[in-house]
Each structure stands twice: as C-alpha cells, then as structure tokens.
Amino acid sequence: MSSSLEDPVVRSTRREVVAVLSITAIALTYTVYTCYRLGFDSKSELKFVKLFAGVAFPEWVFWGIVLPWLASFVVGAIFAFYVMEDADLGEELADDDDVFAAAQAAESGEGEKHVG
Image 1 (cartoon, rainbow, N blue to C red):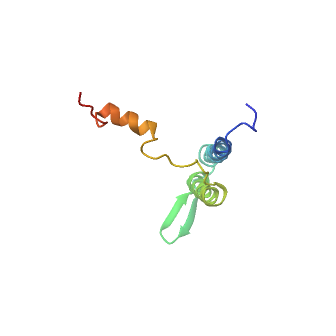
Image 2 (cartoon, helix red, strand yellow):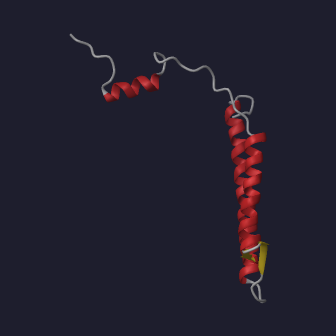
C-alpha cells in the first residue's frame, strides 16, 4: 500500500509504536548489559551508591535498574506530552447512524420491539 493512500492516523500510530518499542529495546539492552557487568561479571566487592541520608542502592541496582527506569519515564513523558498528537477521527455518528451500537442493542434485546 502506498503511503499516499494510507490513513494519516495509521501512519502516526505506526510511527509512535516504533518510537515506544525503540525506547523499550534500548532500555532493556542497557539494563541487561549493565546489570550483568556490574552485578555478575564484577570480581570486586559490592559497592553502594548513596543518594542521601539512609538511602543507598547496590551499584548494579542503581545504574542498571533505577537510572534506566527514571530515564525511560522522562523520555516517555516528553514523548507523550510533546511528540504524540491527537488525530481527527472524523465526525461522531449520531445514535441512529451508529451501526455498532444498533447491533449491540439488537443482541441484548433492547432494540425496537415490533408488535404484529
């Protein structure tokens, strides 16, 4: 299908899905690599990252889990608020023209009852 015939909503949705999956893949790859290198491949003793009084994380947890989670949250929020756009889905159907609602009403027995 050529892109000129493709619905703009489908095009923007595909672009947004690719962006979200890319962010997820990058975060997952970074997390697995960092946790492996700092947690399992490390031959030295366990090190801690102290954030403030009374709060400390093992180094592999902070750099491999906490930091990518926070970065994904920030990138996702920026993407959601500034990159994603609302798309015009067309005019809303009146109740009489809504085929889906009419089919649901007919299935549940709430449609018009004809007396013969």
